[in-house]
Structure formats: C-alpha cells, structure tokens
Amino acid sequence: MARACEGADCSNDAGTLQCPTCQKQGKDSFFCSQDCFKRNWSEHKKIHKSSSNPLGNFFTPTVISEPDPNTGHYNPFPSFPYTGSLRPAYPLSPTRELPAHITRPEYAKDGIPRSEQNFVGRNKITILDKKQQEGMRKVCRLAREVLDEAAAALKPGVTTDEIDAIVHKACIERDSYPSPLNYYNFPKSVCTSVNESICHGIPDHRALKDGDIVNIDVTLYHGGFHGDINETYYVGDKALANPDAVRVVEAARDCLDAAIAIAKPGTAFKEYGAVIEKLAKSRNCNTVKTYCGHGVNTQFHCAPNVPHYAKNKAIGIAKPGMTFTIEPMICTGSAKDKTWPDNWTSVTQDGGLSAQFEHTMLVTEDGVEVLTARLPSSPGGKVEMPAAATNGADGAEKPAA
View 1 (spheres, helix red, strand yellow):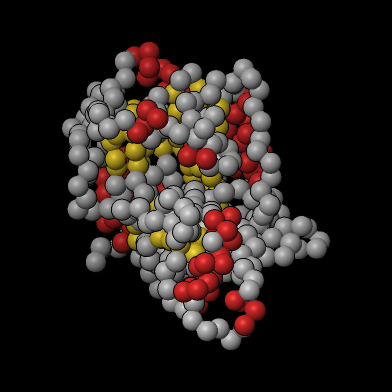
View 2: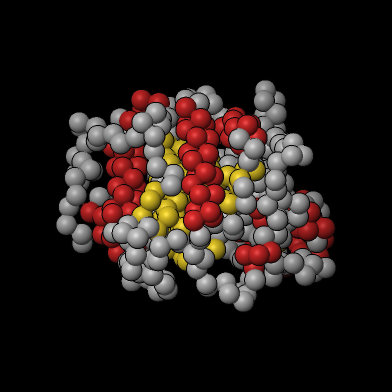
C-alpha cells in the first residue's frame, strides 16, 4: 500500500524524501517533494522534541548541499543515509530534445504509459506475428548498436551525463526514441548504475573513476516496438584487478547465459529464477528480488514477469512468438535494496557491489532467438578472475548452499 505524504495540505503519495530531523530522532516522516516539505515545515516541526539547536525551530533544515565553488555541482540529498560511497552530482543537465519527426511512445508527453496500466488483459502475454517479430528484430539490433556506442566511450573521467548524451544522439541518428525518457517522468535517455547502484541510476555530472563498474541500460522505441538491453562494464584497470568487481560482474553475466540456456517453448517463467539463484550462490553472490524481467513489444513493460530468484510464483509458459527479457541483478552482499530520494536510483542496503545483464529474446519453435545478442565488435565481454583472488572469489562454480 502506498505511503501517504506527511504534508497537512497534501493528498499525494509520499516518495522517499524524509524530514532529516525526524530521521535523527528515529522517526518515519515521508514527504512527496522538497517543496511540500518546506511548505509544511511550520506545522510539521511541532512534532519534534526539543533540539540542541534552538534555531531548528525557526528555520527549515537544509535539504540541499551548497554547490561546489569550482564545478557548481551539489548533492541534492545531503541528509539521506547513503549506503555506499556513491553520491549524486546535480544539477541535472537540461532535458534533451528530439526532432519532430521521431515517433514518440504514448508516455512521451505526460509520462504516463496508459496501455500498461489497463487492468483488463494485463496478464495476457502477447504473441507476435511474423511482421511484428521483424519489427522487434530491427529495434533490438538498433538497441545493441546504441549500447555498444555508449560502452565504447567509457573511461575514467567520463561522466554518466556524457554517456546519456551519446545515447540520446545515437537514438536520433537511428530515427528512434530513447524509451526511458519521461517514462513515469524519468528525466534521462538511459539508466546508468554505478557500483552499489542496482538499477535505474540517473545520469549526472559524477565522473567515472578507475575502479568503478557501471551498468548501461538502453531501450529504443522504433517502428512501434521497444528493444531492451543492458550490460555492466569495468572502468579502468583497477576494476579489472578487483576480485569482488570481477566476481559479481561475471556472475551476473553467467546467470543470464544460464537462464537463456533453458529458454524454449514450454519453459515456465518461474523456472529461470532457480537457475539464476543457484549459480549466483555458487559464486558467493545474491540475487535481487525487487525487480524482474518482463515482456517487451509495443509496450515497454508488460506480461510476463520473469523473477530472478527461486520459489517464485510467476505465471505462464513460453510460447513461440513471445518476446521478453531476462535481466538478473546480482550483488556481492545483501540483495535488499534501498531507493534514493530521486525516486529512481536503487542501491544495495549494505553498499555492496551490484551488476546486471539483460537481453531481449524471441521464443522460436525450438528455443529462443537473442535479439540483442553481442556482435564481434561489441565492447566489453567476459574476463577472468584476477590471479590473486582467493577465499571463494575465484569465479569457479561451487555447490550451492
């Protein structure tokens, strides 16, 4: 059930923005936005007990840090209890524009994917005809090209906002709309999730560092269809030398491959999770339960749901003509997640590393066709564990606990 905003004059559902004073006092107090929080401060402050700082009774607590004098960047949520070292670097760049000739999905204007919200038939899995399958092949091929172009630009010093600009431009060059843009008001054209970020990271001005891992999640809308793909990449030599980074990235890569290996007509969508979880545990990793794979076609997200953990209750079996994603999110430590106050960025609760890989697949008569398959020229790819890795982090598969 949605949590109500604490604003006395507000009927909205709350986001994840909390009153910093209440946080310090161990109280739950959530608001839908900073504007709502500030507007209601004079009344809300009455619930606070006496504070060692009497000025706190007169002034609204600071919820935005001071900009760096050299860059102008700032942390918009300084009171938020971050789980790891990653911090946002605002302000976000202005919304990127698209030429008028680019065909937009239904949510491009107001952020609402209405067809995905229809209650009637929402669990029915679409079976595409031959022409529609060709449409999916094309958009997925274009999505692969865009992802590869973005990945080729990765290096220490590059910001995730620069990656967003590359993706946006590459989509336009292919007469395509970047599907994440304004989907439920997501502000950018791609998701970039760094280190402890599980998914849905918003590109900003933080420069990637030697030692980071970063997931780039690209989806294109072209010809009336969405093509969805993501991969996690190593940034610099330090990442390649980090046993934990290599362990989790390669575990996520192998989990996706293992799940695809059992995909064929008749495979139940609940079966993939057991394969993924067993392999993840054999690498001393865990799999996130909050997010799952999904159907994708004329809608960005639709039936079926494809969980990545064992003993799930997903319904349905694969049939020829269906298109869906598998996209396991694997963590070095806790698989429990926490969402930043931007209402998008999902991170591990313990600050441990997380990696993800995703493909869009078409079910054929005897298996699946991976529509977003890597090309011989695709950047990245499988790497071996660092030679010095020990204590179960050598990447070799071990019996599951």
